[in-house]
Length: 256
Image 1 (cartoon, one colour):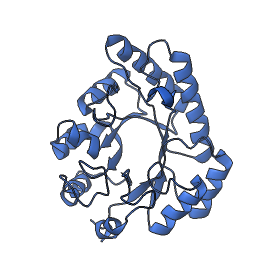
Image 2: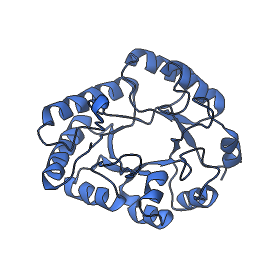
Image 3: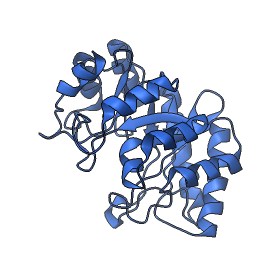
Image 4: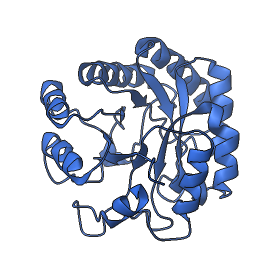
């Protein structure tokens, strides 16, 4: 699997240090790119400088979750919260533009039903318009163990929404960890969803650790991903076993 490239998700990896230092650590560890969750506490100019110094591209970031203290996990599928959702989209587009990030994950939030779907679609149309041709808008199905009540839970649901929005810069974040938990059959589902996929992430199942153990065989899954023509860096979005400093033995073995 020597041609597979990997992106360090700095929401989980090296998240005990400032974002510029985490970017430097990812470069030193041998990652080909980085991505993050919510970088907004770090001025964009500092993030951009760190990326330039490291020679790394940042693949994406998330819109803010809302009121985390009460369990909010995104705003864009919450009826009545359109103004806040669009302010979050504006914030993400501005930051992504300043650091030359390739994508924004628009977080749906905890909701359900036809009204939530309608609002989500309207906000995604808005996001695609704001992002323009240089930024991809991503939506990601999350599993119901880690994100109970989250609006978007399956690849098929996400693909249906992407078809309805019908914007060329709206894509699917295909996270093998979430997809395995929410139904399995991951390589066939990846192949079926490939026309909609804009980013790929991995972690072990069920512990969300490094991708070298657990019930998913990534040596097989990533070989299949490569055979299907996916050549962009794979996002390593996993929880390190020993705090924020990741175990990286898997990285060398997967690149060999």
